[in-house]
Image: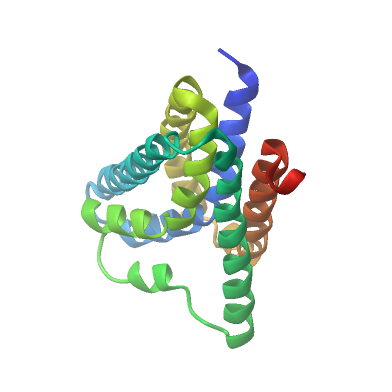
Length: 201
């Protein structure tokens, strides 16, 4: 097994899910004192992420029917999503907007379907990035990506639970996550375009 692709998969998961740590931390904080809340949150996170993977894999298989010369241009999708995220982050910062996921996490202990719904709704950018990466990785590479992602979902759940008891760290992620995510999405889009030779690059 190629350690390089495992490292790439781990890096891709980390940068596309950095905001999920904060959301998970909020869910775990919300579930404090509710028996079985950890199990429900982990189950919900896996359900939501499995749905993200299913959509991305299905779309990637569809993308493989495109002419090979068209596949590098799929890099335009994460590039556009990165620019959109940067624009939204700038507007939210300027307007002092409140995070919708944080608002949704208020109240009693969360159920698995609630966590899954937030995870999936928050995964639109993930799908946009994963589809062109999966389409260019082939079936074997896609399998490695999916396996690494599913292992790292558990790591993310443990991290979210850890951060739920450390508000200073959660505040730091909230402060810098909106800057890091758009930059990484733009970089991934440019990398796909350049490596594929799109626009004669």
